[in-house]
Length: 166
Image 1 (cartoon, rainbow, N blue to C red):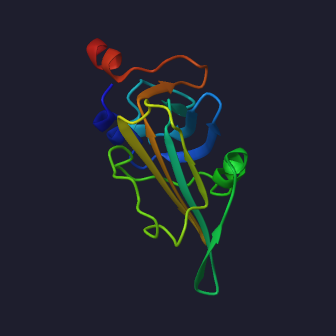
Image 2 (image 1 turned 60 degrees about the vertical axis):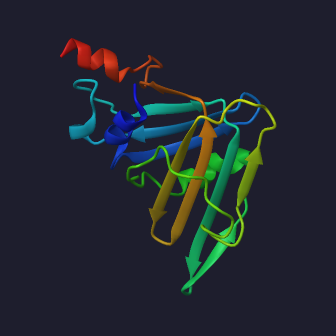
């Protein structure tokens, strides 16, 4: 499953949740691809869980806009679930994979959440999720090695296997 294929699948997908497990260095993003981009056949429930691991770097910027000013809000990895939930199914745009690491000040004066591992792994690929809803903005960057996509029932979803059966 190539990351460019996943970019195509997830372009315009709704994000229903995000969770970071720093102990196991896993970032999970629950996405619902549009019907025309969903490659795994007919499904009543198109939500999938994108898992990236091991994560070596996580950077996030969570902002609100009040009276025309952008306010930066800090949060912890445990609060990522609630922060992502505030966006209530906002859509993402490709590319999600392969973007460079944001520089300090690029998203806001500082990061809302920042985590870096000293381990040598988790550096091959990048994921950037950018969400916008009303007066809220969230940008999240992660550096990782492996990617998995799972269906609502926990089964592995593989783009290559699906294409081979067509």
